[in-house]
Length: 356
Ligand code: SF4
Image (tube, rainbow, N blue to C red):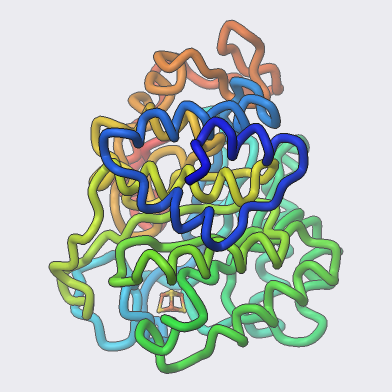
């Protein structure tokens, strides 16, 4: 058995974690998990110092998806009581993005439900990106629009999109259990198209869907192979009205072990604590930031996150700084955040002010 300290020493000088070592990390006893976190934190600091990259989600189009992903509150036939609306207009999308940027976000993630965009949708997103970047030239834009068809990734790149998100979500061996309307390979193909067009690949996971430890290792090593530059780790939010309603398989310590595994497998990649962090990591969220170097500020696509103000306070309290700010926590971009960020109560698609 290799100790976490010895394993991290080897990884920091170029060793790639093996499948057996990865499984050992994931099955670390509870009593030794904080030691593992401290060691994984050395890799985090080696590559990212004390910075936290803040990302902000804008749901451009929500609900009514024809796909049947079991974890998703926007899936075909769900009776989850979520907001449902069609494409936001560019000015409104840019206004929504502005809330997150003023809250410290250096990346805005523009997301639309559905199988994938039409060519008209790609043009529409291009207009939105232009509007967002006109107002905030320094911001990075990531698009998440589903499965891409030939040529669409290049059009998005030309329109100014920097990154493309398409999560693998879980292991290839588990995929047929979570979706029947598209395949794992469909997802990989879209990530390949995005990468080929010069978009930075963003792909990650949803933990807690019934996967075995071996399948979690399989998924994490697959992300390493595809060289995902940015890895969001979601923890299943089991929405009522979805097939995974009532699925609660994670403990806060196991969530930390999953994050530590991703850090050890992909030491220099952006690792983001994403949806479900509040309900699964609970009081250990700031501990998770010792391993992860990125988060989503405020709300998610169909559910509320903790107040943006609490997110920023958590970062400061942990001795970390928002990427793009000076050491005092002041934003160095032209759009400094309010000391009291506007609380997003329901956000995009409503008349209400977002939590950012
Ligand atoms: S394709 Fe996306 S929006 Fe549609 S059900 Fe699957 S995860 Fe949800």
